[in-house]
Image 1: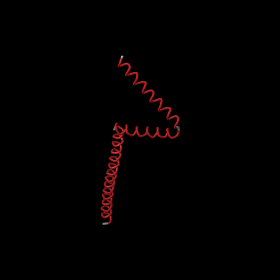
Image 2: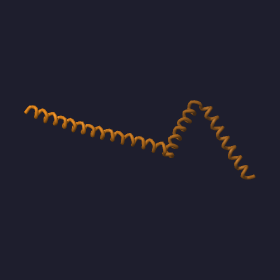
Image 3: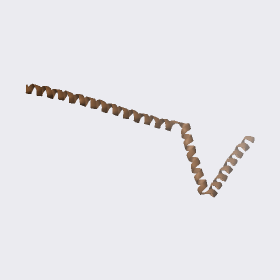
Image 4: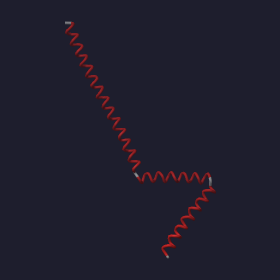
Length: 103
C-alpha cells in the first residue's frame, strides 16, 4: 500500500508541478506580451512624433526663437548687427529681383 500511495502521490505531485509550471509560463508569456505591446506602442508614438512634419517645424521654430533670444540677451550689439545685415541682404535681394523683372 505504501508503494502504491508513493507512486500515486509522486505522480500527483508531478502533475501538480507540471500544471504549476504551465501556469507560470502562461503568466510569464502574458507579462512578456504586455511588455512587448507597451514597447511597440512607445515605438509607434516616437515614429509618429518624428514623422509629424508640422509638429517638428513647430519644435524647431521654438528652439530657434529661444536661441535667438538668448543670443540677443547675451550680446545685444552683435544681435543688432546681425539683424541689420539680414535686413540689408533681404532688401538687396528684393531690389535685384524687382530690377530684373522691370528690365
